[in-house]
Amino acid sequence: MLSKSQARAFFLVGTAVFSLIFIALTIDSMKQVPARTHQDKITPAVAAGKVIWEENNCMGCHTLFGEGVYYAPELTKVVDRRGKPWLKLFLADPEKMFPGERKMVNYHFNPQQIDEVIAFLEWCGNVDLNGFPKTPPLQALTKAVVTGGGVAANEPEMFTGICKACHSVGGVGGVVGPALDDVKSRQTRDEMIAWIRDPQTIKPGTAMPQLPLTDEQLVELVDYLLSLSGGPAPAVAQPVSQESFE
Image 1 (cartoon, rainbow, N blue to C red):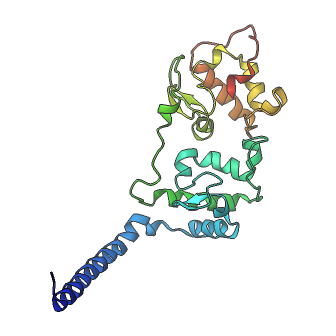
Image 2: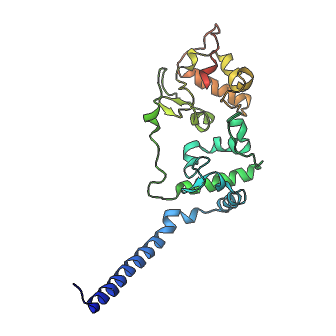
Image 3: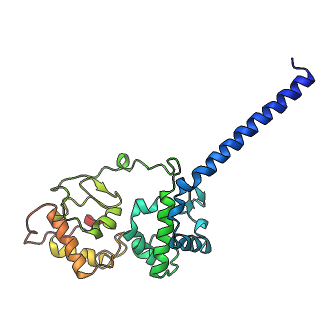
């Protein structure tokens, strides 16, 4: 059993040792902050995006770095998860991307503000957080079925940046909508164009958003989908399956 003097010495020495360890770890952590946060990549656009984030109280619904309210999705890696083209469309009009479902407020951001918010979120996604947030094993929950001719080399940017957020080709992409490898067997060229141009007209309330595509982008996208199976589109129209693109 320790005497009073020994107990006092043990306490003082232990406190001093662990205080020094704590100070050393703190100094080491502070030294790592610039590199881990990519401090040199904080551009004026990133700073402006942070101001927009704070002024609109985005953390009142979302979490960032795990901090915030768990009402809406975690956004630390949202740029990696969704891609910039999709985010631009979503921030311009949240309701359009999820008709009748999303409760996201439309803040009517102008194009510059949208770019600034995305720049801020992209910077957040590049911060080294020691593996947070963990990537969910989506492939274990839903496996895309590849039945067509695989991935074509001429994949349009619009498909890569937006369509793949929900659909997959060759087993790569989102699992919200069906895989599109064999979509040619379910839709004719004209049906694809009509569906992508205005899905709400064909099936009101569908989750498929009306994308702001130019005629050139629409033709490029349909040509790509047709190329997945090879050969021309069927000459005789097949019955339209409204679920084909959902």
